[in-house]
Length: 521
Image (cartoon, rainbow, N blue to C red; front, side, top):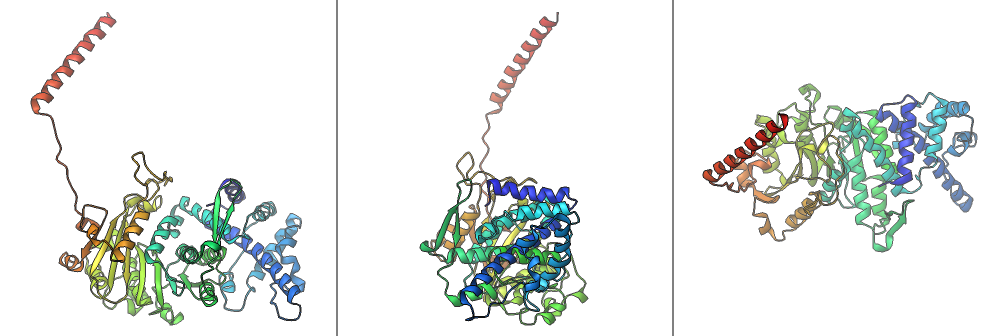
């Protein structure tokens, strides 16, 4: 996490946009992203120049800026006067963004509609000066920096729905434990948090002790960069080019997601404009639309319904529904390879809804696929912008369900009110303030088949339920249906003792009243 002076610099940069008249948090992040991207292009061009000089005529190095485009580079226009800088950035730098990379590349796709919305020259000068000081050369620092920027979406009302809390993402990624050979997708990627979380996991779990790079920030806090030195060249190429795919139908989200992944060290994120529930998905991306992904991680929109005519027929075969939270689950099953696994956040209504569509979907997950886990989350996880109770479903495409792991998360490390204040590691009684690490640890023990007797006790937070029990309950998946509660018998004093106590109290009150009357005389 970023701390100290860097946090203050980012906050000041945010305030500069706010006082400069740009108050929409998504717009602020997008404009900062463009400036960071411009600086990154200049850094990359410096590397290209050194490479070309070193190799001389031995290799053709593709340059980002032509001989007549040098004024578009960060180290050039940042020195210009305010009005001239704004003219160059608005009318030359942003159009140049659209030409970076080959036609149809990620660069050209998410920069196609890039616009400079900064109107005041003074604001641009301040923003450029601040971005120039940010440590975006280091992949670990710039990833944390961007996460801090995205965290400001949680104070933005409805806009906060685009971002799943980072610690929830981390838990879901660890439940799935993706491998460096997997292909990972998110059909409603928003800011790309799940893909960035999976990338971090791949690098962290494939770095040897010798490959760890530990460095200190200005406050003396130690940070670690993971080099992924255990990955072979083919695996590295796969991770960088073909591993991650995200889809969304909000152009702003596409740009922010792409920049988020680039700032986390992904060279070529495959982020595409598409309504994945619509008829256009199989037509536009026939290969990706079905039987393609090894892993799907997602937090799709909870509410809403579509007309049947807008939904592809492959999503309304076994389950007739217009509800988006159900359609996305069917979509994920379609997109997964046989044996592919998914971790997805769903509202609790999906677990116990009584409509034919709800029951049919749950039966589909249990009988025709392998439902592995139901992780119940506390109701305040998505506050301040949503108070709905949710759960994480983990399932694999194909196979049959045998036993389903349940875990009741009561604490996630933050207060469950609208402020979502970070809590100490442990409370006053010594109990951890976050159950998430324990949920992952218990899941790993259960999945490995070790010490399964500990999961027989349904009065604890972690237990399992058999497929037959679930079927007998009409495929109700809610944790409350199966968890057992221990009620302690309340102990009270005998009525005569309580009555005697009341009489003594009445005497004290009468005595105090007499004293008060004496004072008033």
